[in-house]
Image 1 (tube, rainbow, N blue to C red):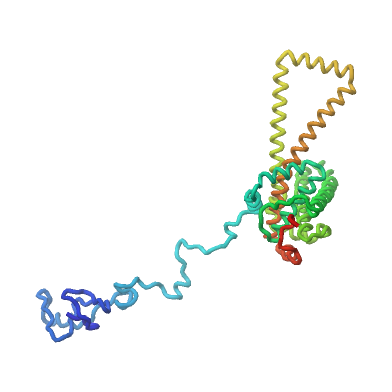
Image 2 (image 1 turned 30 degrees about the vertical axis):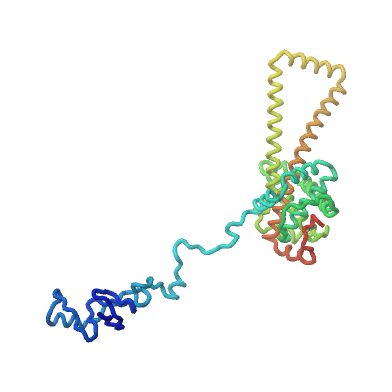
Length: 361
């Protein structure tokens, strides 16, 4: 038996040709031998008409080509493929679709640094000591400015440097100026209902402006760059919500934690006073206080003032301690914000800037 299309020898009863892949059912095989007679086949004109009918071709094209029995089904044409998109395949959006916020990126930078907890505690301790807090603040500013110009890296080891000291001093100067600006609008608090919200919003804007100003100063390494008011105000309008989160949210978190600690201390003190008032010792202590005030009123008032001063000092130290962490987080987040939303500063600051972190220079 031979294939009626290509003449390839086939076994008796084969339905497809192994060479060309075309079907051979019902087709007469050419050759010198006589075709086998199928007793079930119709005779007469119907048989002749069936013998003259060409072999059926599959819908996918010729049997030996794409869509045949030995090939996968043919795909859509080039034009159709360009206009169709498979279900479930989304265009790649790059890093922007999974990019964390500025605060999240800054937190990752801090926690991924080797020995970060010890360094943060050291910064928090330095922030409680006068003049040493300038070094701690400058360290945070310089590390944030490294991120602003595109330098990636963990928290540097060097802490005491002239650049860090000057950056911290600049932050102190800007903080004093911001305090006077906030004090100037304090009379607005007398406006009913809206006075206090206006002061709070104005204070947030002062913090945002101060953060961008000191970061610009550190990036360009010139004190005068902190007073480019028009440029700073123009850049601050870009993604103001993210800027608010970077500049103010760490401080708000620190303030909330501090108030929780103060609340716990006050509740503990009130509980102690309540417990002592239920005992006889309260009466004796109360009488002793009255006698002490009667015998030495000036000394009694001085002792109260000293106790109050100690209480205020402890609260101030707690605030400064936690502020050290908030500043490290905030300035690093501001560095991410500037890199993303103020690329002009990054391009200008990169000109003539060494490729090593500023905190190590």
